[in-house]
Image (cartoon, rainbow, N blue to C red; front, side):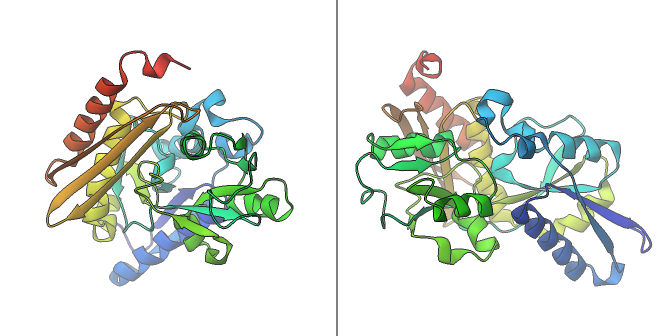
Length: 310
């Protein structure tokens, strides 16, 4: 049980978007538990992923670079919970930690942002597009092999400033992040998710805590959104079964309707020249099984050499 005089500490990255997400969780917890008179503090934790801006994450350690230092503070008890963008989370967590809460998901789609064209198709031949995501790069190359893709790291504000300065002709960002930051006006167009498949768990926030912290788990329980938890479980299982990392272009989207789960997963080569995808429906009672089985299907279709071919 959380005592009234106990301070709850939320660990988070220091970007504007990360702080917006952490503050959202803070306010929701206060609103959901007025009887507890909660005192919640936000602790900004610098991560390796934030500090390295000049190299692709695939070269220096992958997704875990955005969570390593936060998880160390969580394990040591210096913070009580951590707020993350779920798509940044590795599929294997430290043994003492787990994801225990998924608030309702935002828009899953990618946004196309450009001062030169209204759509990807309208970009001039050989246009320069900035992106740090292998998935986005591969999907762009699949649609437009003529495009030049350059590394584009940095937070949302930094990337938008680079676009305004004309450093690149276009970029792609998650609609969810732009919505949370109130930057909808920056969007040139929203890419339909079925045509430009998002990253697994894109648009979803997750909350991580220690497995033995029953009091925090109890506080978080009413904030959990079951449909989000189900769809994210399928998508992360797909990613985990493919041993997905920042070196592998992987896309996935699960949706619910009539108590059924519809799943669409895809793997691509980095240049977008080869891709394999699988669509399946199943019962919502075991979403991880659906994601894992879809992964097995695309791996079988791709053949044993697919992931070693680059």
